[in-house]
Every structure is written in C-alpha cells, then in structure tokens.
Image (cartoon, rainbow, N blue to C red; front, side, top):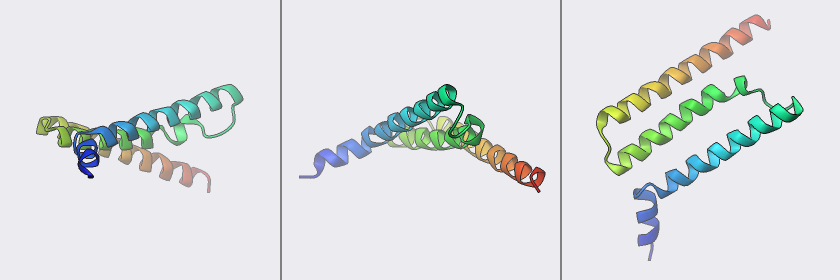
Amino acid sequence: MLAWLERWVVGGGLIDTIIVVTLLEVAALLAFHHKTKRGLAPRDYLLNVVSGMCLMLALRCALLGDSWYLIAALLTVAGAAHTADIAWRLKQRTQNR
C-alpha cells in the first residue's frame, strides 16, 4: 500500500520536491526584496540557502547512487558555506556592539 511512497522517497522524488519549493521560496524572497527594498536582504540568507541546497543535493546523489566524490564535494561546499555564514554573522554581531 505504501510502495508508491517508498519509491517516491528512495527514488529522489521527495528531495526533488523540497529542492523546487526551496528555490521558489528563494525566488520569492529575492523578488520581494528587489521590488520593495524591504524584507530579508539576500546577504542575510543566501549562504544558508547554499549550505542547505548542497546538503539536499548530496542526499539526492546518495539516494540515486551517484559517485562518492560528488557527494563529498557537495558536503564540502555545504560546510564551507555554513562556516562562511557563521563567520559573517559573528563579525556582524561584533561590529554591532
């Protein structure tokens, strides 16, 4: 009965859906900020999005049996983006004191 759900998850359908929704969310945030100059500035979230997107792509690659070095590269980029985001946020916090 749940075989279709298993195929959807294991076949990458779920992660593909999440990736598309995430990209639509980012596009909406960018468009809103560009049009109104309000809302979140891209600098406040883009590194976080890059990190999360790379993690999702790494999961997709693992589910579909892609090469280990592609998975490792995506995880490395995710870690670098996360580190850069944390460093930027700490710098901003230090400057605002």
